Image 1 (cartoon, helix red, strand yellow):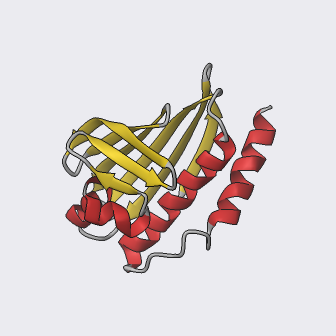
Image 2 (spheres, helix red, strand yellow):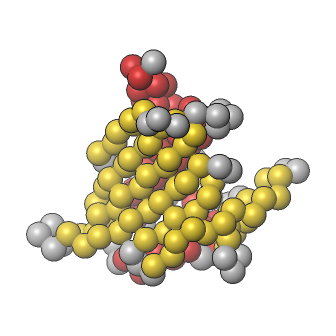
Length: 155
């Protein structure tokens, strides 16, 4: 997985790129359907034009900003914008996933959120390539360490 975290005028942009060898419709289902989402992010479900985040006392509707089947999926994430772009890599006989999170500097617990999305993408990559979905916390500490290290460098 290629990863970078860059400061912007208004916050940070996390960019993650990785290849998947599985069928693209299966990956798309993980992003855009309730049954797919709940495999890797059980607090999320798909509504008509939004994602629903339901955890404890939180019940929030998050707008889907862009949806082009098997190509692009973007949504509001509590004031950040998360985008998945899918492109075919014919030379490697796979698909490349490019995930970006544009997160404002005012975002509460930004480091935790960035680490969470890095972790979730790592899990998605493994699942798409092996059929095995690692436990949410199995990779989280490495994700948190990398994000915190990058944020320290940017200050």
